[in-house]
Length: 149
Image 1 (cartoon, rainbow, N blue to C red):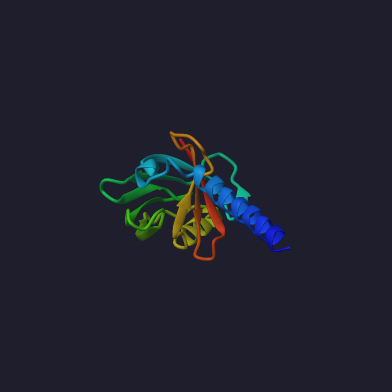
Image 2 (cartoon, rainbow, N blue to C red):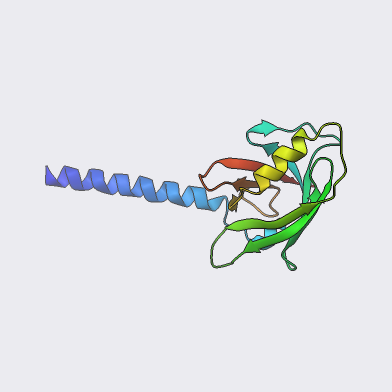
């Protein structure tokens, strides 16, 4: 009986370790420099955005630790905080926008509220260059999906 319990425990541990390795394989080539460049916001809070005039995008300059782009009506800029020792932890700081008024500000309003909640990123891509990045909130929920321009 002890022999059977030992074998079952070994099988369970093997499955657990294999599943952990699988989730990390997709992020093996992911680093902060992977974010460099222009990214379209493909999905926000679980909803795929229509590509068009109001589609937000972000441009990351990782050397300068800044982000700029378009929020859906206005241009935006801000700082990025990350530490290489804290793997895939990221925060958008002091994000500011121009102050134009548009007829429909709903996409921009939601985007600015959402980007303020981001604390972590990963990628479902298993090879480089990375083409898709997911941004998550403190509760682990996927907030944004970015696709490389």
